[in-house]
Length: 387
Ligand code: PSV
Ligand code: MN
Image (cartoon, rainbow, N blue to C red):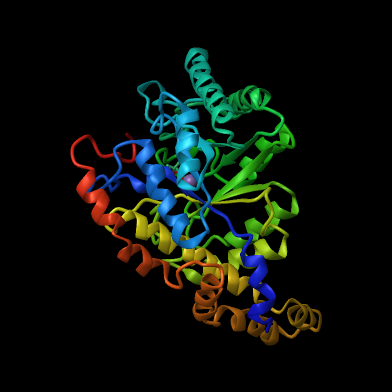
């Protein structure tokens, strides 16, 4: 197997973007639990996100969701981020919480509502100019609940037309990433249900449009690493939304439900040239309903780092030899050797050699930050998913 020293430099290249909404309260339709110290403003969310980077050096950017993270001055927010040692990243549009979008947003049959949804994306692009963000991430809740409710083909045509208008507004250095999801909140059909639809739509737009793969947005049993391979092969894997799921779109800590799946995904990322490649953005899209949010995010980026290290440890030559000779068990053993390697001690040493805490979870717990925000952030309205 490859020696850890051979991968130690490549690990330095890892960057995982954090979602601002991970730091707000969240829950299920049954209950949203609150917690002490939860941010009241986008500024406080950025401060919390910066803690993750401070202890891990893995999370240099923070994604914003509009309108959840609307502020009077994005320049001020960007400056605040910089003061805290991070930068603002992807801008997520939101066309799923407005009454007008009940029957669709960019696919709506009413031109006025469709234009409103397009205008929202124009606003997001303006914000991207102010924040210096590269990516506009679009996830659409559009779909129908009943057969016959709307014309499937017409919706797809309107989607293409709306995306073209949004795409044409992008600056030279900006990109659009289109996320897919096979269900929810619509249940009969979803307008962007799968990677193929997202691919078809972004391929028609041009080079600055890519697919976003959210690991939680697939049917049980889907071979996600195959999709990763295919999108990398086609040059259209723009970004990941990492999270874990047991049942549906659970948004749990990445690597928690199925670390082996995360490993397999990262093996294909490395194989396809998607690692340490600026074209393929690593992001988390998670919520922490019952655990504390900052340590939840620290655990998440450490999980990604751990599985990345294991994926980098795969002995590619031995694998190729075994595959060429048709030695099924030997090929499988090469992968399993890497997956079974406990890289935690080596990663702790790697961190220490870079002036980072060997154990970021303990370092955060002992830093006093949680006690400080719990004492300071009294009054006001805590941020939450959807607000
Ligand atoms: C939709 O389920 C999604 O994955 C999209 O990325 C949204 O922007 C995000 O969740 C909101 O939490
Ligand atoms: Mn997502």
